Image (cartoon, rainbow, N blue to C red; front, side, top):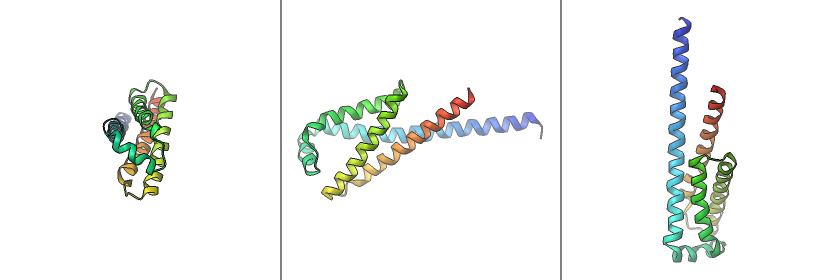
Length: 141
């Protein structure tokens, strides 16, 4: 096999891998976006119900609106990609929020783990593939 064919095969496999990575990143980040948007929307539209459940889980009611705003701003930081630092803080914030949510659901024993675990996996996958694509982009420059 000559060098041109080898280079074409390498380029094609690299291109497919990059597209696959981008697709996985977008699916995971999209799923995270759906879950966090649903949660933030519920905090605004179902405030009475949420404000009854937060104290049962050991959280003060006054954090409901700031938490909803933080979720929306975190999604903006991840999708716009304007600041590396803000994106990293957004991912960290989501991880902390979701770990606290798991603890809260365990405390009240309501069995509401599924969406939280799905969101936590989505955060991890999104973060991993974002960094994988950034590394590949830096190597190709």
